[in-house]
Image 1 (spheres, rainbow, N blue to C red):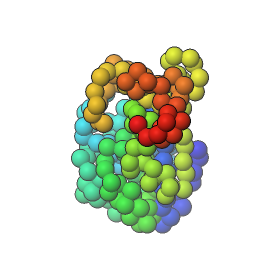
Image 2 (tube, helix red, strand yellow):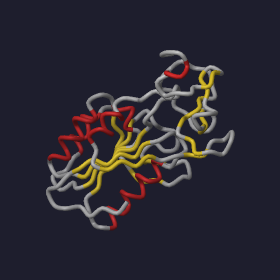
Image 3 (cartoon, helix red, strand yellow):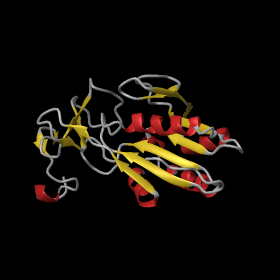
Image 4 (tube, rainbow, N blue to C red):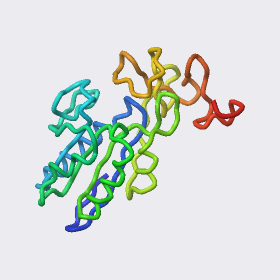
Length: 202
């Protein structure tokens, strides 16, 4: 995606998909292009995501870009500069319900917002607040990984370790990409994101 930033016109871009689908890589690519265009760029990620770097957004293939660590989306305003033109946020699903409102406020100020995050959790259920971002964004990129079982396009994240916690930070040691036909939860194939084909809500 090649976008030319117009002065005083902000918008929201969302990059979503399962783990290992290149979300962070695409976010880094867009932020680097903005810097090449001599735009003032700020990057953020949740403090709890320390898998590859303590002070940078990092992709699984080890591309990195320096960033500011935050615990909540409201903290972005502390670091926002009057001249800031582009804001990138990785792992936006960890920043809570206020994140879409914060990004709308920045877009209204003329800032280009680029958010990357998981759109579903390990059970293949929509992961708030990403669905709200999808409804509000001007540009949406859905990335797909490769199913490690059958090789089909993968849109789900398979948890490999036993845990009922929604948030469990990990990488290839704890997760892998699966297609809808190979994805399981507690050993059961999940045919529908909403559980309809499985005889009701799980």
